[in-house]
Image (cartoon, rainbow, N blue to C red):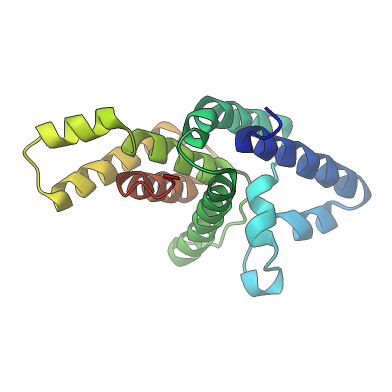
Length: 190
């Protein structure tokens, strides 16, 4: 279990959250600056990574941890710990960046933190990178592009299921879509 990248990721969540709480006790502004991805990103580039493992509250942490535990163990069975961690961090950073950029384009720029984009990436990978999905997609008389479009429509549907106030929907969509695409090409296969 200690060698499990899912358990390691959960441990990082807990350590980062504890540090966030300690820093926040001293200064909420400092905690925001250290952990929250917000524009301009070039001012605090480390928040691209830190924001993936930071969480706004205990319920936020627990919700991401539960989904991580549900899908992480399945994904880690097909890959190495190194690939798992790079995928998780990379998808999480890309999803957070997408959230900040898109929200800045359509309205006021939004700050973001949390692992949900990365967790959605694992969910997307698990969904698209398994033999059952392969069988279903082969059964459907669709071109390669149509299959990708179908998966993206699925990503929109899954994203809308998580809609609510303060939810980073663009990050959820980006993470899930990246996971779907990575799953289709078996990016994590060891």
